[in-house]
Amino acid sequence: MSIKQVSVFLENKPGQLSAMTALLAANNIDIRALSLAETEDFGIARMIVDDIYEAANVLRNGDFIANFSHVLAFAVPDEPGGLNKLLNAFNDAEVNIEYMYAFLGAKDTEHAYMIFRVTDTKGSEAKLAARGWRPLTQEEIAAV
Amino acid sequence: MERYFQPEIECAPREEMIKLQNEKLVKQVQHVWDNVPYYRKKMEAKGLTPADIKTIDDLHKLPFLCKDDLREAYPYGLMGKPLKDCVRIQSTSGTTGKRVVAFYTQHDIDLWEDCCARAITAAGGTNESVCQVSYGYGLFTGGPGLNGGSHKVGCLTVPTSSGNTDRQIMFIMDLQATILCCTPSYAAYLGERMKEMGFGPDDIPLKAGIFGAEAWSEEMRRDIEKTLGIKAYDIYGLTELSGPGVSFECSAQQGMHVNEDHFIPEIIDPVTGEVLPEGQQGELVFTSLDKEAFPLLRYRTRDICTLTREKCPCGRTHVRMGKPKGRTDDMLIIRGVNVFPSQIETVLINHGYAANYQIVVDRVNNTDTLDVQVEMTPEMFTDNVGEIQARQKALVEGLRSMLGLTARVTLVAPKTIARSEGKAVRVVDKRKI
Image (cartoon, rainbow over all chains, first blue to last red; front, side):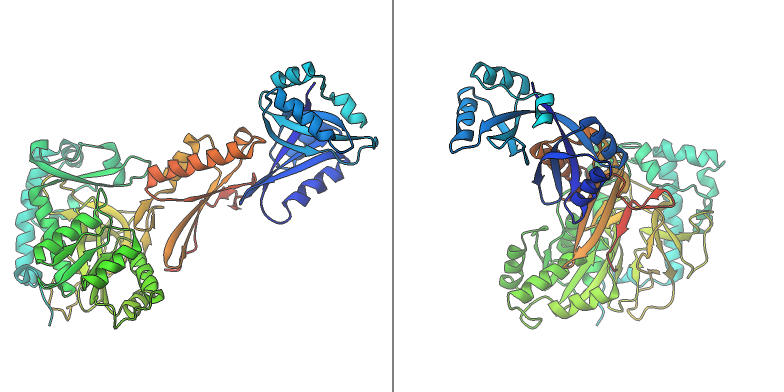
């Protein structure tokens, strides 16, 4: 099962990111994973949060542009070669990664949690599952 | 010593000029009545026939034409001659993306080139001169107009067109060019570049420059004159009337002489349409007296300026107009190109953006910059940077094909475009002209 990520449009200028985090903080929303993509004049913050719908509401009401996209989350053994094993499966399944980032502060210290944005989420998911890699569900990721 | 290209006309006594204008106006009104149904209807609506226009004192009775008429009649509706008699078009941008297309017979081109030849001669041009035309050639009137004028004077004409600065400088230095024709901002840029290359005013062979198609200040003139070691002359015109050379500056540098044997200028109150007395500031209106293919009568330029008949030390008797001080519409002139905010809006909407934008115009190193800031919308947003940038690039391309200018497009957060009294401020012009 894919999980939902919230992406937010940010202007590339001082104070933009903190304006967003302040809004989320004020509404008691926990950011569980975050990555930033930046260009010369704008950036995109992509996040996994504890309450995705609340986060989107709060952001939109705060005049941010936010949308959802489906991403795949995987747990890999937190040891040398852990991520490599997973990426080998991606290679094998010919799954194209658009971008990826890591999960922050999981309670479970044995695993590292990675978020992947892939081309053709559903198809990729099936191909990876066939190779023994099942992505985490929204509930599972919430419990991490 | 002041030189003239056609002294008998340029220095004609006022009475003679009025006589000539009367004859030409009567003929021109009849020509328009017979050949341009669009304007004939306007006259009929006011109960006018050609018989009502006997002298230039009757000019004020005629209906106005404005840019909207040009759009409505686009492309052939204001043509005064059949296609078989027309030999050229020139074109400039219009208000909502429809371009203004002006037609010329060979006679029209001749009179236009005469006007440019007068300007070049007033700037000291002779058949000994090497005249480099660095205005764009093509649909834009700058290049073709000055090119033709330069030929008429007999200058060695160097048709470099715009751009490729290092090549421009090479020709100026190698061919020992004495006259430069381009936009004032480009002249300033060339000057800066030549200075960087170690050429001082004494090394530069240029003696005069004929600069127009955009607003420039007296300070900018002095700067250009100092850097290039030249005398800089202003020139005015618009595609609707032919192009550059509708009026031009003489050695006195105190306003531009209107070529009154071809164009009658009036200053009107832009609100009431009343003709204002000499010396008062208002909207400039032109009547073309002998253009055949595109014979516009009482065309409203939207430029705000004044006219004076005070005696000019150069000896020319033609009325002088001051530098246009502004516009009655929202047209911007950027790098010599006419730009309407509505054109930019059209492109934005066609590309899926909302009409929440701001146009920031500035002048950096004497070159105009155009920055279009547009608010991101939920529809245009994705989590994919490449996709957003591809759309941004497509928008730059769309603007370039609409305006003929490269703009910088910046995507900004929603509701960040400054709004005054609830209404967005569409244009911020930071240029100090």
